[in-house]
Image 1 (cartoon, rainbow, N blue to C red):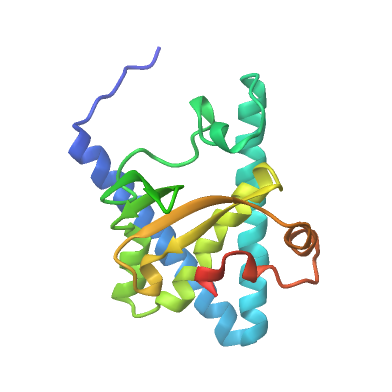
Image 2: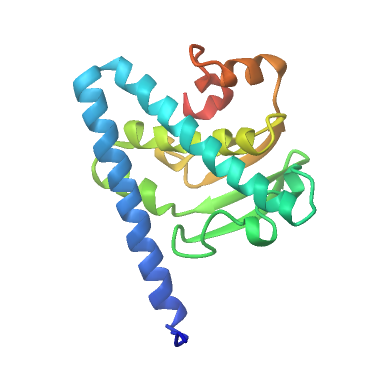
Length: 188
């Protein structure tokens, strides 16, 4: 029989922040090494790795959503047990907003973006951000999550919108040879 452990919320937030910093550093270390060793080819390897990572996240979320009897539609991404990120500690806060009639999610103070800024490696760091369109397309290839704002690109916060994919985007994303980075124009 296990004993239930409880810790104060601020302590839990700090623990998630520490883990997020480590994820940011891990990405930075691998990305720097690949780029140092392979140059531009290293960036392609990073994008393929991030796509693979995003596909795994999307498939996991899709499985959980379907196990709950829901369809893999945007409104169900991250609902119930399929939530794929911690509620706290990875950023300073989030809010839902409407911009020009489009629903968006704003995330302030991304911990990983802060790490990449500390190291002066925002360009390399933001390659990680391609996980967002990749995980959504792994969940349902008809949709992508794109950045309308991106902290590592110099914006004050990250802002996300869910948009339909085109047939060309779906084709390029599923190809091992095609460049799919244009799918999220803010990150290019």
